[in-house]
Image 1 (tube, each protein chain N blue to C red):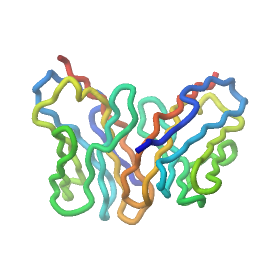
Image 2: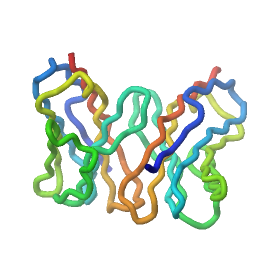
Image 3: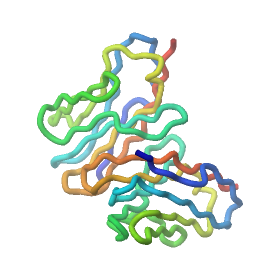
Image 4: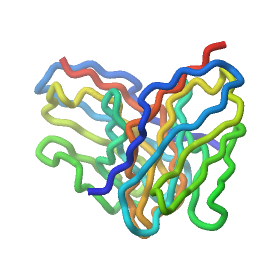
Length: 114
Length: 113
C-alpha cells in the first residue's frame, strides 16, 4: 500500500514570496490533515478536510494560508506571502474516516523562510 | 484550553534500561489517546492507541502504555530499550467526539549503545 506522498521535500524562499505544497493521501482515505510542526514542538493542526469539505480550519492563518482539496483526493496548501515565522515542517496526514482514526503521515515538507 | 504535557524533552538511556515517558492531558471528559513515534529520517507513525477497555495497551516493538483516568495520564513504557528505539515520541489526545488531535511537544529519546 502506497503511503502519503508530499512534495517538495525541502523549500527555501525569501520572506514575502509565495510557496505551495502538495499532498496525495492514501487511496480511499476520506480525511486529510495539514499540520505545521515548528522545531521543538508537536504538530499543530492547520486544516482538516473530510472528502472535499473543510471540517476544521480554526488554526489556519487565513490572511496568508489557504488550502484546497478539489475532487476529495489531492490537496495543496499555499502560503502567500510567507513570513520568517512560517519556517517549519508541513506535514500531511490522512485517515480512513475522522474521529479517533489512526492518522498516516507523509514525510513532510521542510520550509525555510529567509 | 485543552493541552497535552510531556514532561521530559530529552531522555538518554543505555541499552537494556527500562523506559517510562510521561504524558498528561487536561480534559475532564472521555478521550482517545495515542502515542506516535518518529524514527530518524522517517515519517511519524502510530505506536499504540487507547479508545476503551483494558487501560493497559500493548503496541508495536514491545511498547505499552497505561491509561490512568484519575491522573489524566497515559505513560509509555518499555522494560528494556534497544539502540533502535532512538526516536522522538509524541503523545496525542482527542476528546471523544472531537475531530482535533491535540499533541504534546514530544520527547527525544537517545539510546546509548
